[in-house]
Image 1 (cartoon, helix red, strand yellow):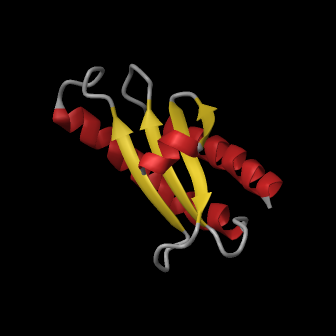
Image 2 (cartoon, rainbow, N blue to C red):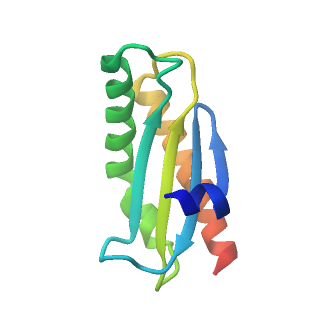
Length: 112
């Protein structure tokens, strides 16, 4: 994950930012994903956990379409960062996740 921040690219779709990079496969999974929410903006753990749960659920739903466009022989390393100040709804998170995955898909096509 350190390599993602050092050498990776960024895609933005408010209130999410994705830091991602393509690397040699390290296991059978086509992607490795981490989810983060700022403790400074959301002091209560239940709020941070709710946002991460929304992010994970939307990733689970839409990841197969994203992984289908990845070039063969690479593995995606992705860090999804929530930067909003308000608690998102499920609908907002889904629209944002779809937009963000679309932007990352475009980038993976350009690299191929």
